[in-house]
Length: 417
Image (cartoon, rainbow, N blue to C red; front, top):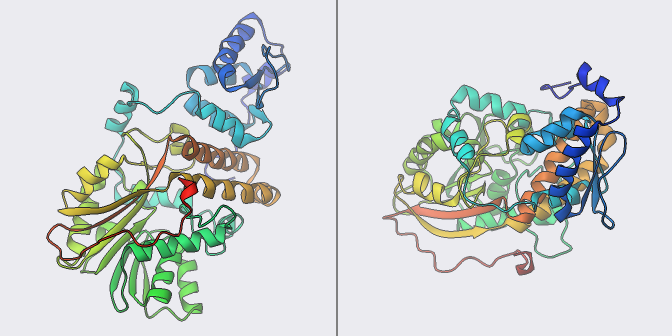
């Protein structure tokens, strides 16, 4: 198994499984059930007993040992994902509905003292650390992502033109929306920081006639992107460069980053600001940032940061404006929140991932499947309930002459907002 996902039960936990819950276990179970009661989730202990006394629940959580029960009480943000991954917490019913209900137990408010301390102590994403973090998540193999992403492997929020749009249609609509927001013109030079599997870069070159330099440090993604460029005869207009965003040089007409800002880390915003300032032509340059964000600064969920997205930090909108755009002397031209479109995107991803369950389990093991399953369900819940946001910011040099009158015709359904 890769990246420590195969985590068997410890011997002491295995011993606990055969013992019925004692008086203390049942008391703790009642306390946890009281917390879960408002969102109609039934708790069961490892002997299948339950303190639930109401009507039909939306789902059940089976806790399989004493240590898992204590973890859910003392540190639920870490323990639910970890115990579910290990098979020490099981869910009966629709996992996404149960996780969404858990997310509604509390509402995003000011960050706690503990969260502020975590932010202060988070180490910077130096280049070596950044490469290791990217490898952990994106170099799982292109075949893995082909199982559940759209046909062009776009691993960012889609934009649904209508309620019955497919994932493929919604991702193409998103690519077009980005290009139109940037007002791309044939012959222009574009820099893309963090290009994934190359879908946006190829779309810009093919449909808008621009030349693109796309930067990425994931070798698996770059190999796929370069192959696609060759197959579509676009290699002369799209250069996929294996390098970090910090090493971008030269001027361009448009700078775009879709889904990379979350990997920069708040202590490296200054480096990104300098690159954006030095990249854009001072008179006609413009740019777009598309990123997962927050209403207020707070760290990413500890379990997701450890198991799925090491080094990840979704910034607050105010942080991006104050720490990235203002230091670069860039003016905000447009801000849009696509939060519910991302919830819908994650629903489509999760359903496709579930359809590929047997393949994922055979290739990576049970713990890996469970970890990614709960990660996708949890992310879906975070955007549905408002714990996470999805921002697009259009910007330009403060002294530039580029004029934006109105947002271009929007392909997304107003009902999604």
